[in-house]
Image (cartoon, rainbow, N blue to C red; front, side):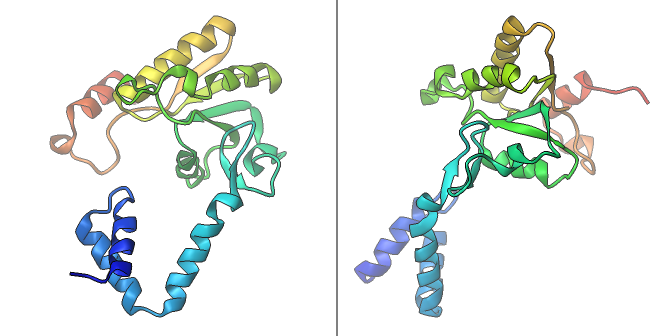
Length: 201
């Protein structure tokens, strides 16, 4: 029913996470009726994406391809003795937006998930353990997601790190009720975590 060129764009956009067929159709039609320069700019950006971005060999954060290591690691103002561990590179920017953290980062590249075929060997755990000695790390902050996979990964990290470095301080981001949320709208996992991590007034 639709021209093949338009169908191709709809199919391509529909492969993006969170984009259903109707949304893909709206995006494709928007691009069709807009100035052709918009489509060209998007196409040029996508073409340059893989050549312009690479992974830091130390932290596994994403960075400009021209850089040797992540600027967040290289910055002399950063405290290399504190490492915050996240699952994915974009998790770093959620923390950075708070402007409250001055240490460095380590990206695992996912979380342990047997159902998805992701094992500990596929994550950057050995590299994290090596960084403890290389950077004289005093504290590891585990910031994996509050999911079954994230929790399993956190437990394994705690075990492996303490086996090799018993004196290393290992902490976990606090879990609990977010500000502005009523108790009646909180789920069981959040409420349980809030109770377990309650603080003294």
